Image 1 (spheres, rainbow, N blue to C red):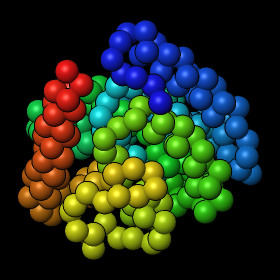
Image 2: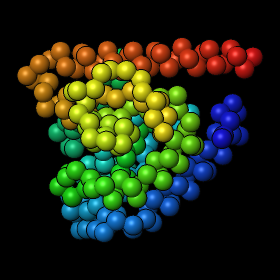
Image 3: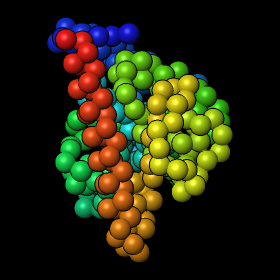
Length: 222
């Protein structure tokens, strides 16, 4: 396990992460995945992840969207002037008093699924080793799976986020705190503006808890 206490060790983490990204970019385990077409909308390229390798929290979605392939940034907020689901994640983080650069964001499946379809069991199994390696490198206190498919992956059984009690759960991947997918917030925000407020409240609660735990751990080291 990599120690987070020095710049040297952060550099080691960065080097290890870059090697992982190179491996992901060369992966062709799944038929039709990680292929470039003439346009990004018909490509199925991989996106490793993005953010702070020292983050105590990892956000994990389903798989990268079309724009994410182009930018190599999960949950990218805009496509031209069009707001994407990543906009609502950024907004919620900002309203909670944070910026996305403070966290690490990735997906359970590295490659864009055609037509934004749900990922297959094979795709999730094939990408599991990459997610495990990201978790090992970053060593977060909490993982936040976003949406039904990410939650189902971590619980290892079909789950609906609306039926899950907001709480911290122990899994073989580490402690998780399931939340709604930002696309669900985006679709329902105009019908019920309190949805975003609840999302912000949940993010603020878990980030403040993690911050408190981090301070306690630092005090114990001293």
